[in-house]
Image (cartoon, rainbow, N blue to C red; front, side, top):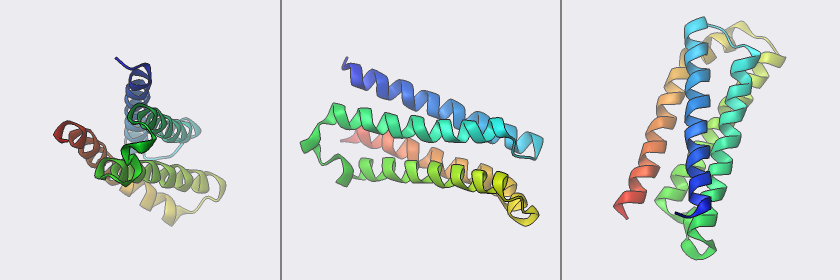
Length: 127
């Protein structure tokens, strides 16, 4: 098996674990703490690194970024980035209304990310 594929899989598994743990803790505790924010950023970094390793596996001429699978990966990275930025903004500039919306919508954002992730994986096997 290609070493970069193994690295990509490890990154994706760690991303899933970090993001899921962050969302579960935020939902359970009904507040955003520094640990959850760090997990959101770790998930973003893991997803980005995993995408980079996948690009190395597929090669430059694969049309990776322009395929439906590539678009799913880009969307998943953007979702994680926006979620982490949103959490960071709430930590830096506390706002009760924004915090309530963040707490309410965190699970929804996670579910959308899961659907995009599963679509990307499924597209790999359907090619």
